[in-house]
Amino acid sequence: VKAPFFFFFWSRSKYLRDLSGTQNLCEDVYELLLICDSYSEIENYCTEIKNTLLNSLFTKLGGEGPYIENLELEFTGEEYIYQPNAIKSSILLTTNYKEE
Image 1 (spheres, rainbow, N blue to C red):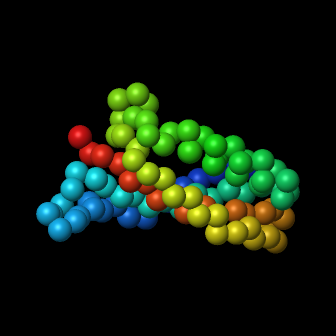
Image 2 (image 1 turned 135 degrees about the vertical axis):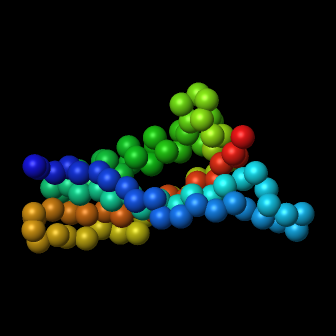
Image 3 (image 1 turned 180 degrees about the horizontal axis):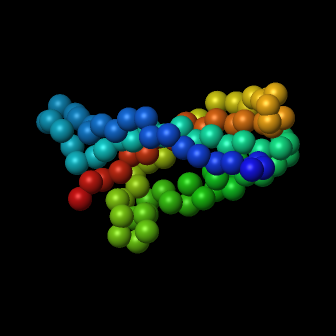
């Protein structure tokens, strides 16, 4: 199997609260990992991922899914991996959405 690889981990989900109690707003955090053969390939895919995610802001996923209120993308950096001679990029994605 050759690069590129893309996979993600769902790390947590919680209901947001304010002084009046629990809201119907949820927050989920994901770690996105991308492994490519070169830095230029990583940059291209990261740009494509960023654009795709930002285009889902203020929409219902899939037309009928949850309404995305907020997205935060945190690019945590790239790292060289000796075996299989590739570059890894990590992105933290935090989403806030209304549960209906």
